Length: 119
Image (cartoon, rainbow, N blue to C red; front, side, top):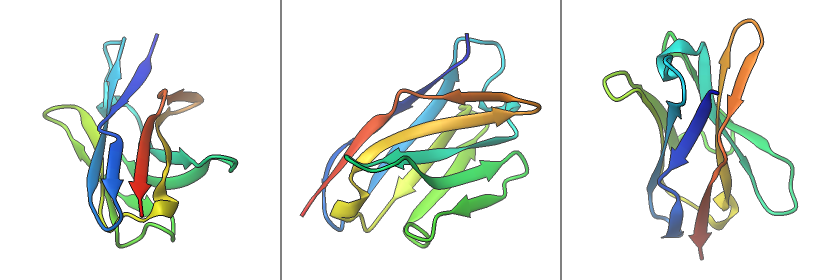
């Protein structure tokens, strides 16, 4: 069974930086085998929202709320996806979920990692 595993969450002060990571486990094919990988987040009492994604060709997309502050990247040598977050604000507090899509209809989600930004 394919799984995604996030790591790197925690507590940070407003204005600080944090990096969360995602790797695939449980199957032969890794992050590189997906056409799109990315991140969503869900804050308490709110719906899950898109944060960022990156395609197999390296095309990155960002939500307006994080554009200019967050950077998504892939490292093929370690087969990891990273989300580097800077200038964090309390409204960035959420559970961050890694997801991956492989055509035609395979979608895999991680269990999430908590990111808490204190004011």
